[in-house]
Amino acid sequence: MAMASGLAAAGNPALAYPDPEVDLQKAELKVRAPREVIARHAQALEEGDKARSTLSGVLQRLAAQRSFLGDTEGAIAAFDESDALARRKETSYGDDLDRLAEARAEDALEAIVREARKHRIVILNEAHHVPMHRAFAMRLARELRKAGYTWLAAETFENTPFEKGYLALSDGYYSREPVFGNFLRDAAADGWKMVQYEPFDQQASDTFEQQIERRESGEARNLVERIFAKDAAAKVFIYVGYGHLAEMPRVGNGIGTAWMAAQLKHMTGLDPLTIDQTVMMAHSKPEAEPGIYGKAVARETRLSPFVLRAPGGGYEVFGSSRFKADMQVVHPRYGMDGATGRAAWLQSLAGFKPLAVPQELYPEAGAQWVFAHLAGQPADSVPADVVKLEAGKPAPQFMLRPGSYSYSVRKYP
Image (cartoon, rainbow, N blue to C red; front, side, top):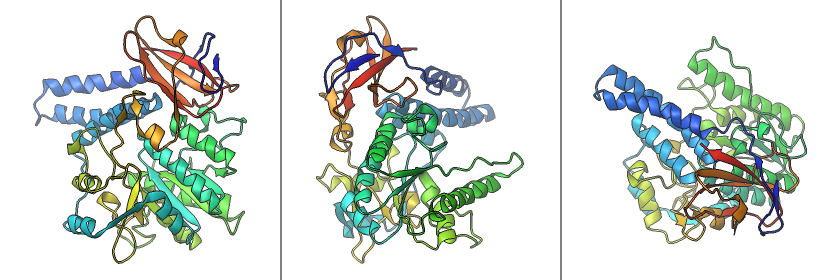
């Protein structure tokens, strides 16, 4: 692989990138067929409705694939289209504007860490197609470590990460995404003890509700057995997707399935601090955003994440996470950085630095992805970053930490 020392350029041929789970062309092809069906049929026809449902599903996979390949904005656009096809819209409440008007913005990291000192479990969620959420998780993990938290559990882990001595592609599905990889390497360097807790015991005969119950209770049970049974005083940071942080409904109240956070609270007697960051964020277009989000960011000049403190104590939570989470991160509209051709949060939130792609890795024709790996790590390590280069077009820059890197390439398509 080509090598770069510090933030310098490289000079040797690069190897091909080997991850079989990353196949954007396949994901794009799966989107094409239902699009064609929809184009041929009227809105009301059953076949068109089935195609819209299929397209909504495959767009979610396309969003993940784009995120794996550094296309952060394209990932959000694909998921927004999926939501529109499925007619999924964020929940709104009649008192949203009043609650927002009375709330006071506070720095998200400072507020969360202050509250975390009163708890022993912190649960933060993510949207699986949004690497920005992982940058915030990385920043939060650094502060929680200083506050005495030592255990890190993540939904994505398929086994205990770093068992090979490095973060491998096989350690988790979503953790193959570069920002997630940087988050976990940062956590490992900070001394976090990492735990896999996702159960793999689904039964084909289970109903959908039984599958959810089996998974959520299994996740909580594994956390108890793998952390709290070993360390009675454990302080734990759990990083989950979407609704697994929901504290409501409670276990056994008869009004719905209890999610992982509620199950864990029931099993341990510990009240987790739950934080949502999936609702209040920028989307590919304003109409895809909750209306309250635009109003919240319009009144703030800060370009860093914040939470909204309620006048009577506690924090305001909007959308589908209301009544389910204790706090909610509001991400500003970071936008794109014209100098790097990348999302601005990669520098302002994640703290990465720009590095020009070595000239010899530019394609003479067509397009290719170039992956940056930590120097000395094997081909199946999670890359530190990836950019797409197209012949004749301005090249985006890598966004990396200072260090030595090697490169691998993958042709498109």
